[in-house]
Image (cartoon, rainbow, N blue to C red; front, side, top):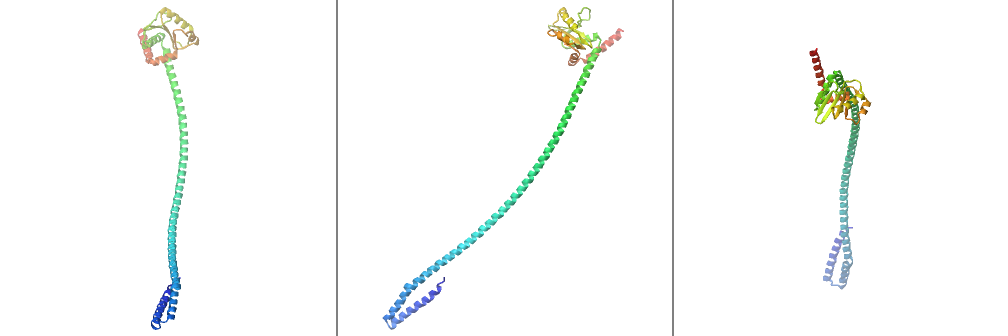
Length: 299
């Protein structure tokens, strides 16, 4: 409440009473007047002025409270605007984060789908390659089996060819070939080639080893009787070993009879292997050529 209008009348009233007092004092010097004036002044000083002073204080306090409330309202408004701006900023930031999160999630989903597609494609390609590999491996095994079979056939044909050439030799040519074989093995050899040789065709000596050899250019089995004759000849020739070499085969009975005896049995297949190991295949042709030339000159 504004009480400024009270100050002017009170001031004027105070001046009037003061002037009246002064006039009465000067003119009449009346005690009654003095008492009235004193009462009025006392009333004004004791009653009215404190009331006015208290009202002034209330007015100032209300003014301060009003100013403080206005400041608080202004401050609250500023804070509301500030926090509203901050909330809007955070909301916008949150919206951007949500948008970025959605974009990242979509990108991640695309990458996952691409990887899944790539994995499926890779698995399909792997299965395809594994199938091709299995097919090629199977084909390779088949080719390898055919190759091995062909090698065996060629080996059999070659062995049969060598064996056929050995069988085509004359008996004396076959004996000379066996002698050449033992020479290749490091033996000193000698052909018997005479009657009473006890069935022995070649004598081979190397160090303290003395070997007698019986050559059988057969197509059939060698019977145990040939082995018994060779075993008996060992004592005659004082041999330490005996070799029975044939272009045919050796019967099971002959093999059983020679068990635990110093007699080595060499059939056609084993003979071909010895020829190949010692590289004597060309020697067969040379012996045949030599025999043909000798026959021509003898004729």
